[in-house]
Image 1 (cartoon, rainbow, N blue to C red):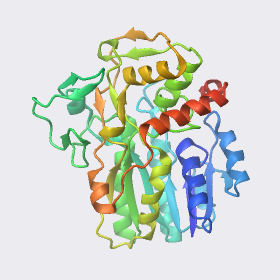
Image 2 (image 1 turned 90 degrees about the vertical axis):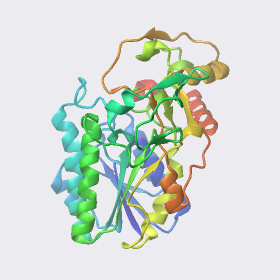
Image 3 (image 1 turned 45 degrees about the vertical axis):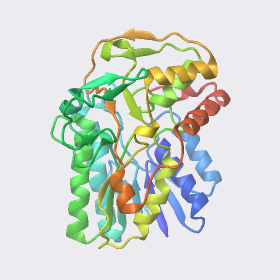
Image 4 (image 1 turned 120 degrees about the horizontal axis):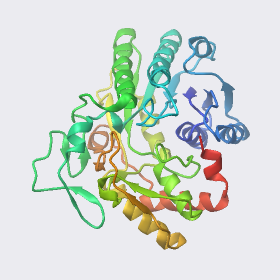
Length: 356
């Protein structure tokens, strides 16, 4: 089997490539990256040492993608993954569209030409912001939880946000491009008889993730705490009660392998949530408590200024993946945090390498 991974030198892409190399040693793993992210060259060398071919190409360039060797499956891990993409000063709205939507089109055309299957790594950010921002919550153990006394919106329960939750705009430019990509993936699959799967991932985290507050909050927080760098609780009264769940990319691989083995006519759902779920979720305040226990005390500044797209509680419900694929996460939250901490201790310059 030949597996092509876009964005292979990013955190998700490189982690998946190495895990596939370990678990499917007879597969040919190769990929491409444009190396515009700080630190991506480090992953390039690590992949090459494991016999994984990496070449320079830009997913936004149709000619770059068309020139890639043929593969049996494409895993699309290339994206500008920040919910603030296109509205901050680091990227333009056009760049977000080119990376996250037009790049997917280029890969789908590649799949059509080579009769390859396609797996899209999508995001929890395809879900509607307004009902999530207005969710009635209460504080339990320094973390927001859905208020059981309030009527919850359709598709949301104490287990998290399910696939039938609203995807109505606004969902951010990032979320919009990924949702549009999902639609095109399904259309290409039906029109050109290609096996396609869509996996909406929660927050991915683990050792080697670049420490960016908009893309790798767990890594950023732990690395910053260890180095005694400035930290802020933003929005929601400045208390740090906002909650996210956490998933190690390694845990995606068993499902990806099942999807690759499934027939095009398989009855499993084409779109599923994949996340750590409520059991592997925590607030920033709880993460601070963990860091204090590991590294000692550190002050966090309270800044209650609201920001666009902020939501108090974002946990995905992966019940559909459990029912359809017998999938559930294997790496515990504690293991993920410990892995990040050990990596941070071994790489004192990680925040500088991760900086934009």
